[in-house]
Amino acid sequence: MNVRPDPAQLGAPDDGIAKGDLLLDVKNVSLSFGGVKAITDISFDVRKGEIRAIIGPNGAGKTSMLNVINGFYTPQRGSIVFRGEERRAMKPHHAVRQGIARTFQNVALFKGMSTLDNIMAGRSVKMKRGLGWQMLWHGPALAEEIEHREKVEEIIDFLEIQHIRKTPVGKLPYGLQKRVELGRALAMEPSLLLLDEPMAGMNLEEKEDMSRFIIDVNQQRGTTIALIEHDMGVVMDLSDRVVVLDYGKKIADGAPDAVKTNQQVIDAYLGVAH
Image 1 (tube, rainbow, N blue to C red):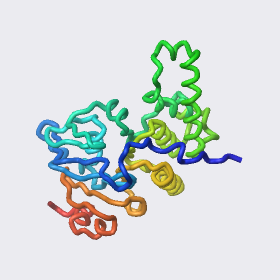
Image 2: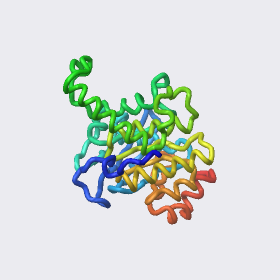
Image 3: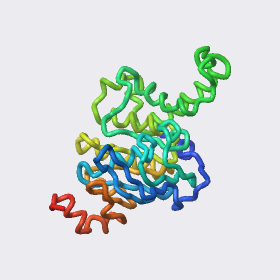
């Protein structure tokens, strides 16, 4: 019988921020591509331990917002404060080292590699031995490799994907590929996990499984989550707070019950002319 690992051993690292305190603060961010305004003067925050949803119609600027947070885009105006450190420009690998990990709308895995090796790739940011030691795979490098593999096996058990640990991910159903991608992000031990449409393209059963794991990641591992999702039922069930974007502007921000009755939000989703 498989026994799920102790969540306390798998959680996000202690960043010195208490649950409920400010973890991420997006301040007056604007982003343009040529003459196209993707994001206009958006501000919102994410608090330690919560599930924060970013929603809106297609083209609202949601993915652009995640790309600003994890350093893929540099905004023309505004700044990001993460764990008390303010910055405007940051490379994605710096964001990972600071404790921000993400998944993508379209699965971004190494299709010819196994589930275990894909998740192991997420541990590379945690490895301290240089390339020379890793190539020798001896002594300290071997000990480090074993330690990281143990962490990966814990994540595999946590996500209940033991049966596909050696399967090339290109041969897996889409729902399991999305779970493997979640595992790779968890392997980075993030303080903030960004999920870009984690349930896109899934059937009802796959959505239920993914919803359960998102809740487990948040509640058992203590990982703060910011997610984009189009399934409003999922958003309302999972989220502590919701920020709504439309045409690159913020139109609502608050608790799920308040947001879903907001007339501007209703109009945006019904396609009422602006």
